[in-house]
Length: 281
Ligand SMILES: [Fe+2]
Image (cartoon, rainbow, N blue to C red; front, side):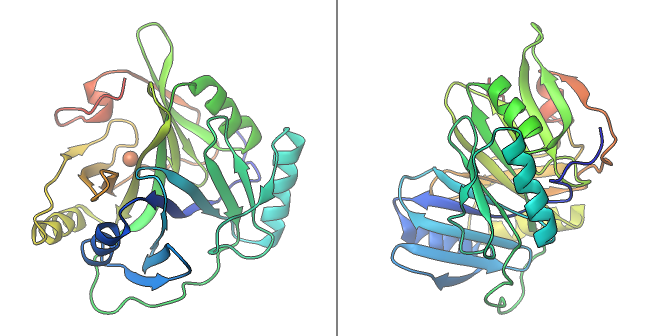
């Protein structure tokens, strides 16, 4: 499959809604090592090298939007033209972290994605923090066929892996927008919504360092450690105070733009080669 105008976009930030901002802000400041800046009424920016998160007062567990960064204005214009040619509707971007000219779309489930050239980080983190850059976002969806068509045809994500049930129905679809195995994925589920996000680290030792660091805050591992089949990455997951799932990952597989989609069975080993799996459906 050839490169699309989306190539090589990267996930740059998320905006999460929360009904309880105080414990969420504390968690991302302390446990995730991010520096906080108030950016308006009920909105906070949390930053560390490679990871940026917006928190906004709202419904706990809701993903307000995802922000993807493209490398130039020319890329952005080409992407917007591609989206329009495929029938996608572009609106103004709500993200303060993207430069003028950024645009937003809504997928078939109503999730908002913003695309633009990133604004430079507004602050530098004080002190030591462990490497972990925001790398992928996953949503749950009751209508995977519509979502897959939108992400692949309209937005130009490239399919990396499909997970198939015994009846042939796709239960998970992993998409890349640069050589990393997935920057976005959608999992079949009864309810639509935010599934998890992941921070990619440079090595397995960083996974250990994150787990040790989180242990000092008495934050237990929720799932893992293990190695995903699809993506081949080492991982563990924790829960933030709102119950959002936060993944730490290393060794995520790379694929070039020509790599054909692969197929996996819908079973435990596809999600975790080492042990037990969290099966969404
Ligand atoms: Fe993940």
